[in-house]
Image 1 (cartoon, rainbow, N blue to C red):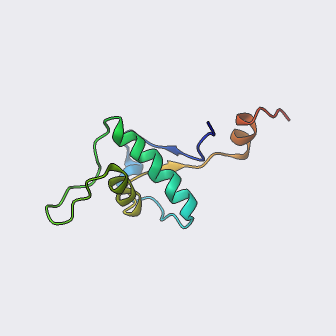
Image 2 (spheres, one colour):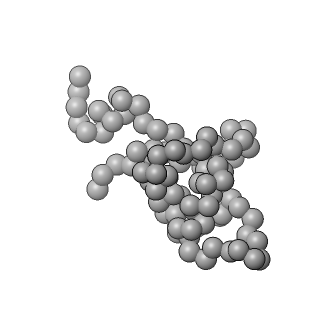
Image 3 (cartoon, one colour):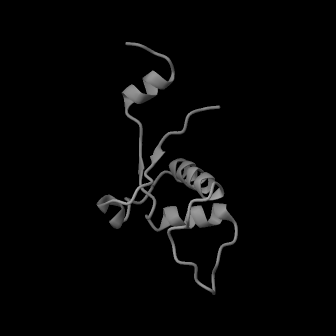
Length: 90
């Protein structure tokens, strides 16, 4: 299975108090939301308040909304991380 292009941050920290920068790449958005949905399926608690009027029921929708609103922090790998992941040694 291919490695993901980012890491989701999961602890409580001051960095999470500020919204994440908006994701402009739809491919990165899908990747981050998919990783967050996986966390939710494994028991992580949603970071958004559930309203009674518009409540997404599927965890994938919850994850997408969290990413849209910037409550999910993520980091992108460096070039070195990618090269190490592919088994290259330079």
